[in-house]
Amino acid sequence: MISSITGILKTKSPTEILVEVNGIGYTISIPLSTYEKLADPGTTVSLLTHFHVREDAMLLYGFYTEEERRLFRLLISVSGIGPKIAQSTLSGMNVEELKSHIIGGNVNALTAIPGVGRKTAERLIVELRDKAGKSANEQESATFSGTAGSAMRFEALQALTSLGYNQQIAEKAIRAVLNEAGNSAISLEELIKLALRHTSAR
Image (cartoon, rainbow, N blue to C red; front, top):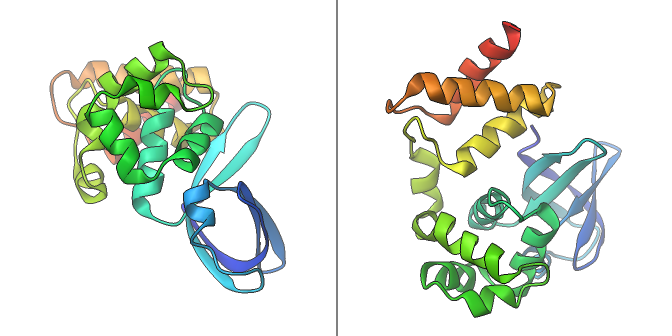
């Protein structure tokens, strides 16, 4: 997966930038929180990225800080929240405000985000309240039980689909690994490796 990018900033808008790396231009979607930190076109820029694979497209999202990317990934792990809504969410409020609304259970503030209804806002709070309060380092070093967090399952799925595996086959392999793990702790790396064995065994 593409996890970061460094190159010349060719063009920028509040939602999208073009970065040239060794003669290749990469279109990257960004939240407003990242746009505000960017220098003028013509300068070198370094961003953390999230590579999102769909059946009809491969999309690259860029972030100035690890905390922005972490929250983006947490958001899209929730049912009903896609990358566009997650990007809009990080554009409408800063990281600390978003974490505060999730931890505090502020449904009204979350439903003010375009595309987020009351039920989706409630899911955000229920699923992300504990995770939103963690720092990026805590999230990175955490391991999960056999009932792994949705963010971890999503990252494993992204890894498998980026390797060319069918999404349904990848999801089935991940579920099989988690069922076999039971209550044992399992890291993201272990989950991906074991899921690859399941897909290879088909």
